[in-house]
Image 1: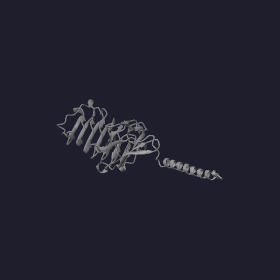
Image 2: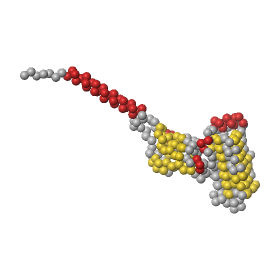
Image 3: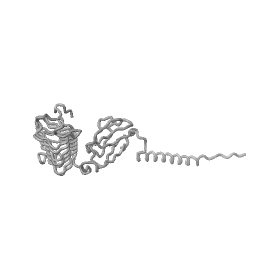
Image 4: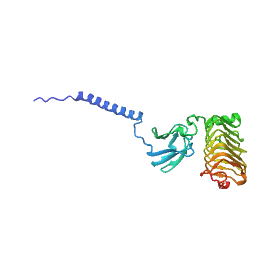
Amino acid sequence: MITGQIDHRGISPVIGVALLVVIVTIVSVTVAYIALGLADETDPQPTVALELEQTDNNVVFELRHQSGEIIDGSKTRLVGVGDEDALKGERFQAGEVVQVVPVNDEVKLIWSGENTDHTIQTFDVDTSTLPHDIPNIDQECDWVRQNIDANGNLDMSGDNAICDVTEDVNTGGSPVNIDLASDSVLVGDIDNDGDVDLDSSVVAGDVTSAGSDIVVTTSSNIYGDVVASPGTNIDIDGNSNVTGDVVVDGGSLSLDTVDIEGHVYANPGDISGCSNAELGPNDESCGAYSYRDPSNYDG
């Protein structure tokens, strides 16, 4: 009986081709996962529940961590608010709140992982509830510096800007007078040695001055405190509104047809006039309101 021998030489190329196809397929899938960001994230975004709520002053919102993991603020940025780094350096955890000022009708919390960025949560802002048109606030501190350099003072007429107007933006070093008129909007604090004059304008922040006068008139709104350094005068009138405290120490205070939602800190001898005003959280009249001692202000 003759036994035939099997020729294996024809099988080897077939196996080689099959292995090559498998290898190419594996490599292709791996490349696709990497290219499309489908590979496992070694630094995944935290799982959290957040809430963005408008506060009583209408301009400032509170971002509240309701539940879930701790958020490492160094890996996040808030898109659509005045300060994108509001969480920087924070270990944001359940029960905590951070205040932000929206400058767009959509706010996003972005997490920067090792492989890609993720949107943790998106919030819609109802701009109709705000006292100004936030999408139009497009100037920042560079514009403020240029304005000061060109004029010697900060003159805003119908302009909108996001900036803390402090010594950091005053490169000249000398006191800068601040004049906001014609529906101007400044999102940020004012802390300056010059005079402050608001006429039909909005400041979303605290106003502090060591100049001669702080004047707020013609339906202006300050969403924060108004604080005069010792000897600085404050004059608020014309249906204007302050959501925070008003503090005078050694200067004069005049209030006429205004609403001060916080407390008024002033010595009796510093009050030069008060009429048609609603003062304090209980909207008391000038005669009924009990003024606070300026030394007790802790804002």
